[in-house]
View 1: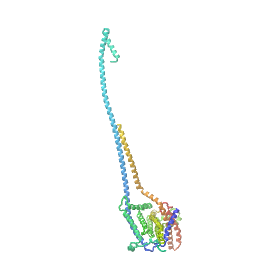
View 2: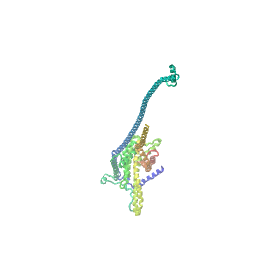
View 3: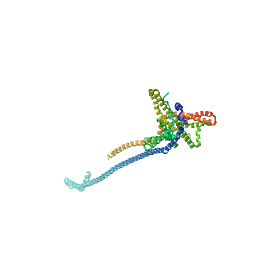
View 4: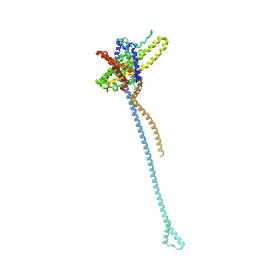
Length: 190
Length: 250
Length: 124
């Protein structure tokens, strides 16, 4: 601070030295031109002031204002465009997600449908086969029953013939019949 | 000693300009320089405002730079109310700046090196800012000379000091500008005259030796360029400051 | 049936990649937009900062030019007032002598004000 002040004081000596040098035209107030220049300065300054304050400065101000407005508008436009773009991207993503979900649902549905159809087909076929099997079994049983029924008289005949030939006498049918029946039962045929 | 003598002050001598017509109405050579300064400002505005482009050209950028510089100075120093005084500050700043700069050119009269000119400008600022103070605050503006928070018995001593300090404003404002501009121009003239003296006294040897004052003058050009801008700035910022005091009273 | 999920996942991966590129673009765009808005909003304070930074060197010269003038100016005014009052009241030269210390005090007051050591944020 003190050094700065000292430096300042030394510098301030310079104009003082200049003033000490003889008579200065600036101090010559006897010269009418010294005061006459002030009159013209006032005229020039007043004209300059009104030119600048009424025309020049407002014009510059309007140019600067217009620029500021333009920049603000452009930035706002950029903002809206960005928001729009963001919205579009979000919409796109949503649509894509929706489409993907729908496709997956479709696939699952098709799969389930196919499964159900196959199951139904198989059931129909099974039923048919079961029915056929049942019918065939019934037929076999019937044939067997028929065959068995046919074999009993034959067996009685054969037994009668065998006994007759072995013993020479005709067996009593009342005794023979339960015997044959027991033999059938023993062989679990009937 | 025969030969040229150093006439450092002749450059400040007033004469009439613009031929016989100027002589008839006492239009001086300093007024010529003032007219040229004002004309250059107006021409700069005309050229700068020709296109009014969103993206400014060079001249438009220059004008806008000046505009914003002074405008910010007003708003920063005085506050938002400062915009009322913006055209005035701009006029003073540009006028003094152009006057200082034009004065640096050979054959141009530096009108800011005349105490009569700077004193009348400073007195105008002083009277105007005092007027603004009384217009804004009425007679309460006298409180400006009463420092706050001092014992009453000190006031008879402090109030005159404050008043003299206040009254010294136009003097320091004008003397600063006048002295700076005068000193620079005198030094130029002294060094240039010294070159002539050296050559006249020592012939060819002196001509070689005069490279030293020539170099000093070249260095002075840079300094004076700085001073020209700085003093215009100081005048403008002090004007703003005085207006601040008038508007805010502290 | 089994190949379908893998195809969709490949598609999804591609979309993600594109999304990442987009997000990077968006980020830089957002940064640039914010920067542009900052420039508009903060251009003035920034300019002021630069001014005050460069102003430090100027301030010293500025001050140098002022101080001597400030001191002398107050003294001149004081002496002129004293001289005028003397003439008015025919008290030559006492009021002028009285005004000299007052003028010196006023000059010091100017210095204090100019260096800003009292009022802090003053620029003069």
